[in-house]
Amino acid sequence: MRVSAINNQKNANFEAKLNITGDPLLSYWNPKRLLPKNAIKRLADKAKTVGTDNDRIYISIWRGGVSEPIPNDFLNSFGFFNRRIKEVYTILSMFHCFPDKNSIDSASEIIIKGSEKERKISAYKTIWKYMDLLGEKFKNA
Image 1 (cartoon, helix red, strand yellow):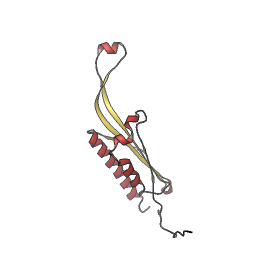
Image 2 (tube, rainbow, N blue to C red):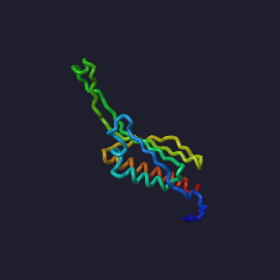
Image 3 (tube, one colour):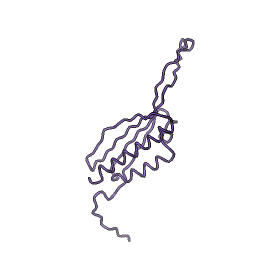
Image 4 (cartoon, rainbow, N blue to C red):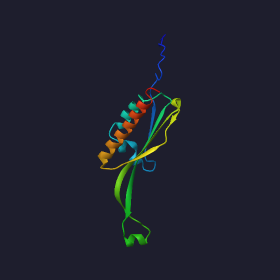
């Protein structure tokens, strides 16, 4: 038989759940490809320190871009319209739902530009800082 100590600490059970979703149309651009290596595991571990097991943190990350048409009269006459990608960026949407603390946030959308490596690192740091802010906000709540 095992006896557990009675713990009267507020917020004793941590482990908020982290839900990360990616681009629904292109499976190639899943969240693992838009974040640094092992980032999802580290973010999930970080989320466990933020809230209770009823709390949820939702992250959506996908690839976006700006394109322009390529004029080609021959292909255009057959209905083929070619496009050239001018700029690629990462879009990050984050919000949380902490029902025990009556806190439901509206989604904030962030556009991250730069090279592929810069976008990956910046997206990871942005998510990490968001979870840090949530941890500080609900630390004493």
